[in-house]
Image 1 (cartoon, rainbow, N blue to C red):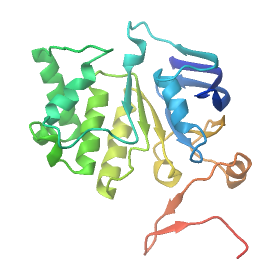
Image 2 (image 1 turned 135 degrees about the vertical axis):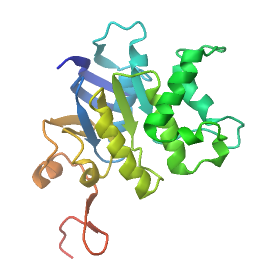
Image 3 (image 1 turned 90 degrees about the vertical axis):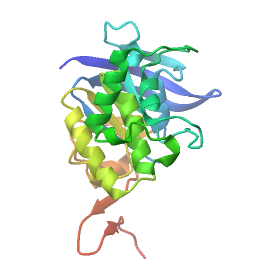
Image 4 (image 1 turned 45 degrees about the vertical axis):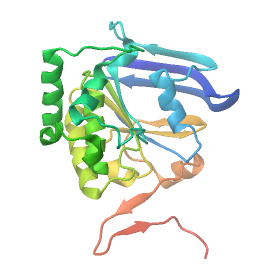
Length: 250
């Protein structure tokens, strides 16, 4: 296994407010890490530290790569997309934009770039949407397009922040099959409140609630969750779809 990213004793937050305290994490090339934790506990802050969107107050973030643009080897699918679906842009152009690094105002795509974009769309199973305007896409289709955008630069690490938010069950099932296949080529970090769904795909779990507790397994006990104050939603199957709630005295 090759180490891709190392966080060591990281403290981070916003406007001098510390959200993450003494967080350390090593990410290797074949990892599939599920990140769970309460809202406001620092999950998205952790992703932003890894992506370089915010700098730690203390501690270090090290990238083990020979690439000039180190953080460009990270693909990112955010929780909420900010694409204006009334904007006149086609699917192929959204995917191609994943090749733009830095703050370049003008970028000319090559023929090989277009070929790569088409190949990425085909891999995700949406090559038929290539020339669709963004406004014609459903929520699930748009998420797939944004996933293709995250993948076109051939990242070594793919980060997804609650990718199943606001999409249907069909997309969710297709997504995890795609991720399982992609994990043969890259490390994956996924934030989710639903460990019941992701447990069969992820390899390890990180509980994030201001600090980080790492489990080298895709199984976590009720006692561990309670001790880390790490609430999650557990989903099970039966004759009628239902959610299992934690025990209570009422």
